[in-house]
Length: 89
Image (cartoon, rainbow, N blue to C red; front, side, top):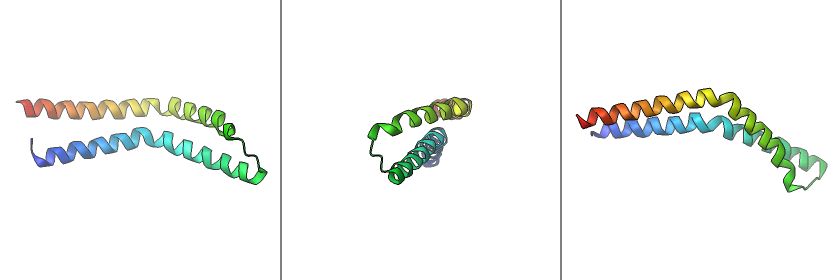
């Protein structure tokens, strides 16, 4: 396996991880920020207040982006297994 193939597989891995996990992390970050601002404005210091909204928003994002995530992961694995088959020849 050549150096360029390692770089390509590493880049594909990072891109797949970012595209797969990104929407969920961004949604969790935004809902946490919104609830944090709300808690700061109202002086409510309840740690469990963020749990249910985050759970609902992350569940919704996962449900909406599941087809995209599955296609991204399957494309990545097809690429990796193609490279493995090409190297083994």
